[in-house]
Length: 319
Image (tube, rainbow, N blue to C red):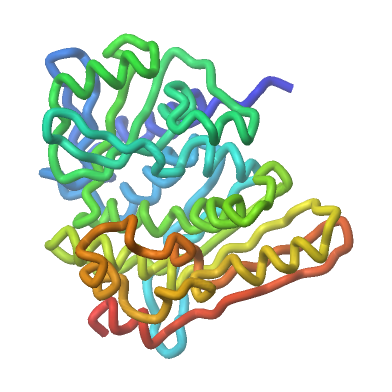
């Protein structure tokens, strides 16, 4: 069987986005270098459909997403549902926002298929035993600004491709598309937490997740906080695994949800401000879905931990 290429599969999804820019509310332009820039919310309108398809691109074409609605207590909120049969590659190998970008005063968080060419961060690719080999690359940047030319040079150098084969998608957290694609990371957030607790990501065979899409806020800090709360207090992730040590698995599941953190319970904006806006001062155990469910196909048993926190979710969303 040929190894999955997240850039090849993601490129097929990207073509749908670029072929119907009016429908998706995006603007496509060429930088002087030849790199293609897709604006999904900086100056462009973007929207729910743009956020949905960008979520699929972030997953390297190895997952599907749809917009739905879901009840959280008495609240009924727009939500995004994602699923994949290739969890480790789709999430850690592509979707994970693990590329910290800083260039000439320009800062952004990078995710998407291009990471699997640049191997950012390299240790994750060693762990899951994956790397991509393709002549085109897509990177998604959570940013409110267009990237400088020097950054585009760095990206093509890291990915070892020419400018005309690089596409950069811009998704501000303050935009609808940005909010959708962040909530669409519900499965990835859970896998990242499970990995930190000692579960081998390659033991996860299938996964799905659902999280509310937060109300849009014009200020970055508030928009970012609501996006976090959507997953921390409203997100559910479900994994089908093949695991030998069920006692260990049960303990991992117990420690996996966001409520295992000492910082759990308040809207993220309060925790963020108390930490002087420094992510590194926040307990990393907080960054996890509200609810995790794991089905071990070795035994058929199902383990669940965590809860939907409607009160904190409503407070965060201004409801």
